[in-house]
Image (cartoon, rainbow, N blue to C red; front, side, top):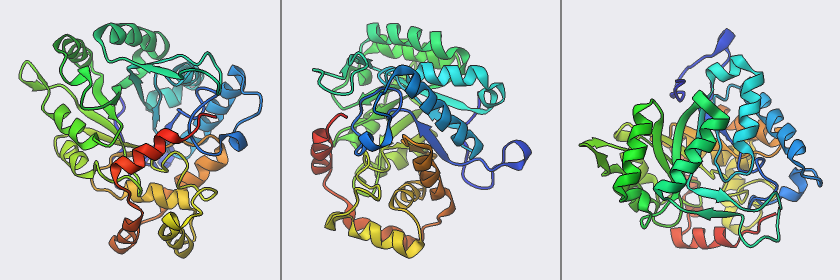
Length: 334
């Protein structure tokens, strides 16, 4: 399978650069999500075909810019379907891309952006895994490279259920990198518990996708441990669901970010993502762009080389983890 690009001078076809940034599809695989400013980013008529075209345009632009990792999930509406369609029509890209997806949430919004009781329902059971891996395989087939348990917290059965572990070990034996994504103020605890999970004496998990950004840095030590253990470490929500975009980073709490961006002649989003990429344990950093212009801005992060002093200047942004996740829980679906 394709592998995640490592840091350094990596090149693709015809010498084109391969970036350590990936493309996430949470914001475009379904009509509703919690990224701030979506009303200005997406068409008013968010039909399936409109978001399919938007996803394909983002994938085209990302691939042309050197992105070789795409992230989807069963709960991202039709994201897996959109990615599969794109891969089917672009064999060169299909051969080069690493495709990750996630299971454990079931999409329940029936293509509505708001006004529904629940957009997704979480269950980390063997039965849900059996259903969702079949659904993912039906769409992505052999293109599936990384499969993560979605949004694991310390109380998740994904950390303790031997029947589920046996199924995940079987998938890993087929060549798929098995891992987990994390959320909530106890991300570090979750990662460390996952590092200890074994099947037949061998570590089960080999990848983690975690939230890290200048506002939420609490998982960093555990992510360093995962990286040292050979895991693929992917950073999600590097812009804090849009809180660190230029249009939203306007308060006193983000003054240090704006000051650094101004000094570097860069956008706030690029600086935030560059700060994530500068972490020595980070293999990939996801862009959650909803427009090609946003993606272009996000990917300028690859041209920024933040110094230790630059990174230190961002430390005042960090919030207590409980505060960060409480704020995130109040963001509206739109």
